[in-house]
Length: 339
Ligand code: ADP
Ligand code: MG
Image (cartoon, rainbow, N blue to C red; front, side):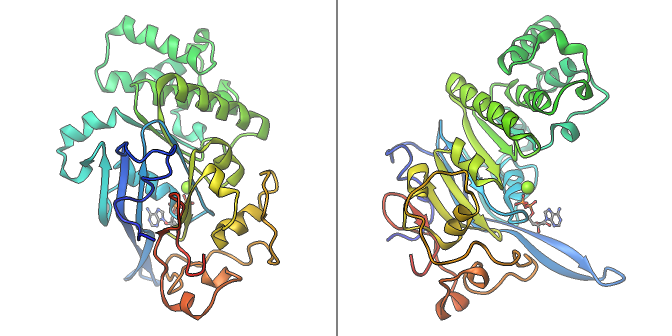
């Protein structure tokens, strides 16, 4: 067994270990200082992301799942450098984002784009859709007026919108169509990496499936790499090649889509699977009940294994020693003393 480090997730991606990651994070941390007390004088430290290492390889879909508040969105913002990390590294095509000038970072930004959960709040309601999709092109000075006009039309077609609707406002579209607008915006600059944070959580189940299929088709067509984040295991499992399971700022499990459904499971993954009846699977028989209680506060995470307070398998060692994320074979990484 090798402790996780730079190599996290190298093996096991489409059976190949020769590709270098498109994006990678190493021991990444983000600590927020939170005021407390009547006058807000005392600070407490909230460890939103607490030592995460993972790699996302070209052309793959890496899905990140975990209960609300476990640090998924913070990790996404750190990867896109929308926030500065407290510690650790973010690498894009092997380049440490920390070492880049703001100009270089701006150049790199073209290649990594974000799709947000709620297209309604991420789209300026006062702007017409054509303008919203053109905005990234204008900001990065790509093309003249008529080129941008044409590009917007073809982007709208690609995501299943009618280019004739370019003069309408976001509120005149349905939720699914608005997410298509968000995806068209993200595609405008021909990125390599798209980070989608809860891209279908705000949509009805039938519309979710359509948007997920659109993302799949666009990936094939443009050879996109996805980091898709969701609290819904069904969504993540459907779309991902590999899946990372987060709990209280740390990664508990990294598995391929197939490994994910076959034992041995990480106890937390096992609990999540039990709560996701939509996923067809085998071998999940277990005498234990689904997840109990709430996620502990990231202001005072449990010592040892963060999951031990809710884990039916927990023992003394789990209360004292944090388990390392280790390769348990074939690139299935787990942080558990007993698996
Ligand atoms: P998730 O996306 O998994 O629901 P988040 O990354 O949004 O989780 O949040 C992780 C933790 O960090 C939560 O406890 C959240 O309250 C806290 N958090 C997120 N952003 C901030 C911030 N700007 N200031 C203080 N705490 C924050
Ligand atoms: Mg979130």
